[in-house]
Length: 201
Length: 201
Length: 201
Image 1: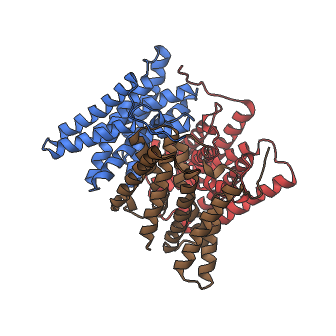
Image 2: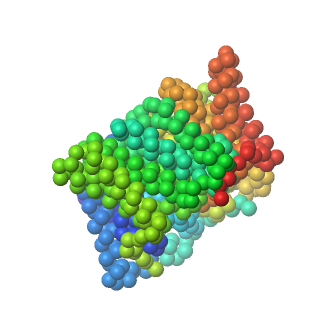
Image 3: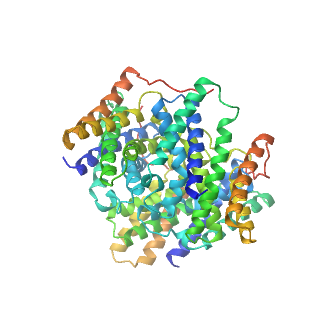
């Protein structure tokens, strides 16, 4: 799969998470599509604006909007007909986080950024869509809940870099990075895993 | 009227809405001007950054800041001397939404974006200033209330595109689009119109 | 000291303020670093994106991330071993505000922006990191509290411009501007100074 394919899947799962978040606030149908769009393209747009990559991926290629609209309205239809799977929003968010974190890291690598910048830009690409979604519906961003979140993105990216620099091909390293981020996040939700937290009174 | 004239009027009405929102939080006078500025230039700035149009309209042309300062301080003076008209914030917001949504769509057209991107960029240009304003004063963004909001912007833009592609000149199609968005939004406020909403428990 | 040195000090103090804000929400260690990073680079990134200065300062130069990580983890360590000084977050925020406001103004001057744009861009550079930090931890942004905040940035920048245009060299004018903004903000906190505020019911 090419990077664009991963971007499309990431866009679709974040669009679903945006539609579900919109449903919790009872937005109207076009509001659902708007929130799904912002969630879906937020991370990649931040990545491309920061790296000055123009035209932006969704301006160049109309496919992204079709994928978003189909995902958002499909989510509405699904929820109307059946009930949404438990934690559907959290699962879609975890997949989007993993896909965008790794694709963001790979784009930053391609722009010859230093290692720490690759890790930061990948993490920012992964979390930005969800942060925008949560801020726009006035929820506390998932990144602030105490389970592992940005940490899962960082660990997936770091593992990808380690495997790749140890000689594993870019492709498998990339898949393992995505799987690591998604699994870490999902396990963290299910088992309420936390890292040691820092507290100031 | 040229596009710049519409931008100036949009900037003025959004500056008024920003000043009124600042007044609800009792900011000091310079804070009022800062919030009015962010609200007024937010949408157009997002549009230009996403389309990579530099220098930004307000960096190039100092007139915008003078219009914003006069609008913001004029609002303060007006409210001190008389009481503000009922729903003044909502009315200024509706006009700004309509002017920026249509001007954003026209700029995106000029950059040869595909249709769905024109609709999205226009809508984003229309709503961004108000979202920034509401997030900065920690209010739930108007886009999330259940009356028609982003929907009004989308409908005005779509009507403009339909009329224009059916042979009506760009000018009148543009005015009709603006009037449609503003009227839809104002009627939605007054009559509490809603589209069918989507709910997830 | 060059502009980069000021940027580095500003990045360090904003990173500390971000780490302290993260501590109030009990984020995990990597979350602390992420929030410190966003706070530290937010203002300068906004400045550079708006002025189309690429590559961004922190993409070009890996030192910024090292400074941020050391500042954030140093803050965690310090708070674990001793208790944080009273109002540490407010003091770090005031210094970051002053440093970034003046450096933002100087960069905007270098890009030949008109006077009002210099004042606005400097102020935006100064306040953006703190606003992002507060929005991400779902706190009411400091800019909205009623003590002097954006006003302190504006006054420091205006004083710098006046002194410089009256013949004082750029260097001393710049230092006096920074000191003015930081002192005004700290005195405003300590003595609860307010400008006349504007109120709409």
